[in-house]
Image (cartoon, rainbow, N blue to C red; front, side, top):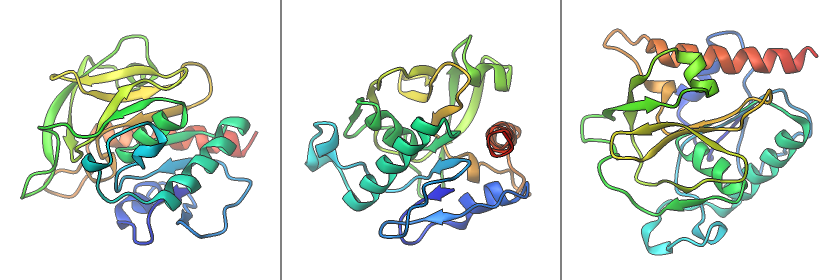
Length: 215
């Protein structure tokens, strides 16, 4: 299941559909199912600053109805140990859900006029993300102006940018709960092929979804 605003870029659904996953889009105001096998929190506008004590003047595109929907779904996912993957805004929603805080605005990470910015990140040893990629550093795309400030309960940092911005978080243990600040669903080369890291992240998430569905 993929969350999003009323209009969502098709890249998110395509990111999962490519491997045959039955991805369903859930938007604010739609019926929210009680049972699902995976939850992908997509990118979009800023999280309501009232949820973490932020400054409203630094935020844009706030959608309280979407925040409420995604918080409810996260509650169900955590209670039932459903695999969760948060992308960009989704990573921030995950952090706020667990009681963390965000930077209202940061520089140097927003998209450029001709597309996403690119930069390197350093992965943290001993994390699921590090085990997944098997490398110390990685180049990713970037299109955000907010970032995680204080970690939510239980989360650990699994990657940082060179300027110290948190680029990935996860919950340790068997339950797959991960948030990445970049956009793997559109990290492609000139031929339109997803980057190896995007493919590996997708495969790892969908493997957990299939395992949960078939347990």
